[in-house]
Amino acid sequence: MKIKERIVFYWLKIKEYYWALSSRTRKLLVIAGGVLGFLLVLLLVASIVKSSLNQPVVKVVLPTPVITALPTPVELTNPSRYATDSAVLKLEGNLKDNETNLNNVDIKESDLYPPQLDFNINFP
Amino acid sequence: MRLLIAFLLSFLTASTVHAQAVFDYAKAYQDYEYNLSAYNTAYDDYKLAREQYLQFNTITAKDEAKAKTLVMLQTRDETVSTYLTALRMKIKETDGTTDAERESLYNRIDPEVKWYTDHKAKLDSAGTLEDLVSDSNEAKDHYNFTSLLIYDCLIQIISGKTANLRSMITANETDLKLIINVIRQNQDKDTSLMERALPDIEDKLARSADKDTQAINTNSPTTFTQSQSLIEDSYLYLKEANANLSEIVRQIESQ
Image (cartoon, rainbow over all chains, first blue to last red; front, side, top):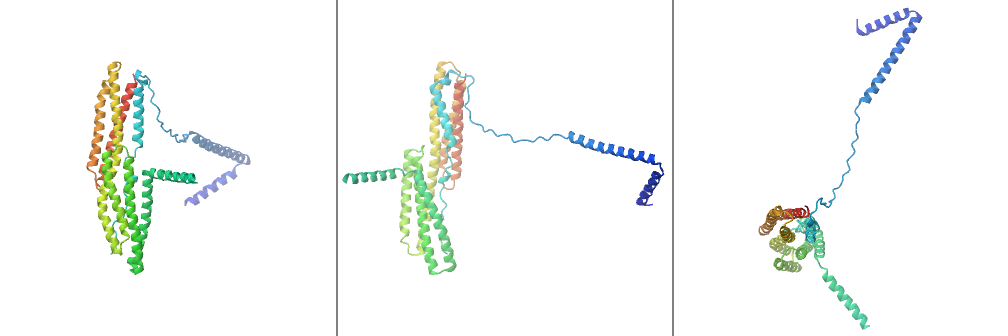
């Protein structure tokens, strides 16, 4: 017997048993089936809700604002008596000027590179 | 009326003097850029006229080619002479170059500018296209000589900058030595570490000077890039020396 025929055979058998039952038993069976189905649906919904609650929370990573490092004057925590000496302060200022000059100097002077000129003029 | 004329004349004279006085590197460079742009346009015209002449080989096309070649050669000479003038003005305005070095370069630049000015004037007398080609070849040969001067000027300008910075840092190093001497005499602060750091700074300044000398001595149109990197090395030594001096000053200022 093929599977399809077997299924039909059992389905007919069940229907036969069902209709053989008293009307009260059939009602009870329908109510029990409905309650069972409801419980199954409830179980399914509960499992879906539970799984969604257990999922790890995805944190949205926001870009960290870039803080431009500004040159802050180095504050001396424990200054010596020379920290306010005019000669030392003058030298400190000169060295800072040198640093600025060193950072700003155009050591390549690429604007002054020779022009591209064609000296190979000929009329063959 | 006379007073009015005198006033106007004096105003005009003052304006002329002022106009002459403001010829600086910026103006010279502007002139050069203008001439380079004119050369590029003339060169494109020359290329087109040349192609047409080679393609059609007619008398009209040859005349057109001659006319465009003449303009191109004239603007090329003008570009070289204004470029050399810009270099001269840059040398004049760059600190760190000695008077002798400046004069030596001026004595080489000025005849070169004259050569290209004369050559440009001569081009008008060229009767044929072949004459122009010959005149161009003359400039081509001469430009090999000019190139040597150009790269000597360039290396002098950039090494002048490092020389200037080095002289300032050296002067600061001398000032620092004097301050350290005073502190040592006062005997209220240990100066041994600072004094030990000074020879290292002096060494960096000496190395910077050596790099500059090496760059100048080995410079040529073909080795300019190497000379330029020697100047960059010199510059890095200066940066380190200056940072080291600042560090010592911070030590002086701290307990």
